[in-house]
Every structure is written in C-alpha cells, then in structure tokens.
Amino acid sequence: MRPRRERPAAAEIERRADELLELVQLGGLGDRFPHQLSGGQRQRVALARALAIEPRVLLLDEPFGALDAKVRKDLRRWLRELHQRIGTTTIFVTHDQEEALELADRVVIMNRGRIEQVGNCDEVYETPATPFVFEFLGDTNVLGAVAEGRGLLVEGADRPIPGRSDAPPGDLELRVRPGDLRIADETTPGVRVDVLSVQKTGPIVRAEARVKGRSTVLTVEVPHLHHDATHFKVGAELRLRIARFSVYTATGAPIGTGLPSDAIGVAASRSRSRDTGDTAATR
Image (cartoon, rainbow, N blue to C red):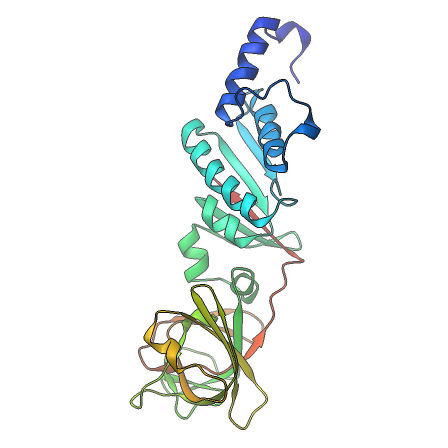
C-alpha cells in the first residue's frame, strides 16, 4: 500500500482500475460484487489488484487451488499469455507439477523446505536429481537392480540392460514412467507379464500387469493409436522393455538416466504423494 501522499488522484485510480480489468479480460464488470463473479473471475480480480501497485516481483501462492480442472487449465493458458504481455517476474507456488511445467521458465522443486533440484522444465523432467523429483513430476514404476558388468541386472529380467559401467556395487533403484514402457521384440531383453486390467481413458490406454511368477505389478500407458496398444488385453502374456529410465542408489543418489534401445522394465508401481512437495515455478 502506498503512503497517502504518493497515491494518484481519484480519476487516475479509476482509469488504472479500468485498464487492469481490461488486462485481465473483465472489462465492463467493474460494478459487480464478488458474489456475482465466478471463481475464475474472482481469481482474475485478485491478480488485477496485485498488479495495481506495479510490483517488481509477483508472488502467486496456489492461485488456482480451489478451482475445477477445466477452469484451472483455461486460467493457466491465460496467465501464460498475460505474463508474455506484462513481463513481470513471477514466482508461482504450486503442488501441481503440470502447472509448474506449463507455466515456468525455471522450476525449483522443494521437499519439506529443502531444495531438491533447480532447472528448466526439460532438465528437471528428463534428468531428475533425486527419487523425490522423479516421483513428484509424474507416475512412477520402481524396480530393484544391481550392476553386472557393463549393464544393469533388473528384477525379473532375462538378461542385463546395457547401461552405465560406473554404477556402484550393491542395490540400486531403477525408475521408469508408465509411458516409457513398450512391447519388447524377441531380440531385446524383456520380462514376461500377465495383463491384469486395461482401461481406456480418452487418448490413453492404461494397463496394469503382473510379472509372471512374482507379486510385482507395473503400470503401462500407451497412446490409443500406438501399434503397441492392441496387444494389451486382460489375460495377455507380454514381454516389456524400457524406453527411458533413471537409476539411483539405495540412499537416493543419482547414477544417471538411460535411453537404451533394448532395455526391459519390471517394477512394482509406487504411488506418488504430493503432500510434501512444493514447486516454485518462476518466470
């Protein structure tokens, strides 16, 4: 709040208010009461009020948390366009990784007040520094592995995955996203699984599969038009490979990421928790 002696005249305040309402696409609604506005409109009014003092840095703390999914998506698109117009440095705090990756130029991921990783969206998603970052940014399958020669012997694998030769001895964790599991051909390492369930959710086919002879279950997601999708039927016996993965020691230290052409994946699907993770998405 500016001291009274520094405040502009009433006419200037009114002009600025109308200008900000136009900026947040609420022109002509200046005479309405809060109860006459939708949730999304009230959030835009709050942003206009914050911009009224022409801040050097704008802090948005979970601004869309109470809104439904469609309104949140529309407001994210609008906020990104607005930022491109006004250029104000913005810190956007959220527990929603989709919001962070869609809005931010630079992402800071925190766990219980401790910074886990800082980087641009591609860096934190493609090379997550810790298991927490990997799980925070998307659904995760986790499987045990040990170094063997120049590869990794993964839980349930019929042969080692070609990988890093500098992996330390001892137990390792290999993490892979459901969308990075694919059908293995006969020339690649693979694991036999029994498909337990298949669910089609719009453009995605989501399957749960148990490793044959084991209790471990993994989640697989395939675009419905992908040629692999037709193979996923309840009761089907399949062999799966990994298209991309990250490896960590038992204490969570990163070993690296992998993009093998002939890797396999078997894992127990570990549910994600967003309860302790915060993302500060900065522009």
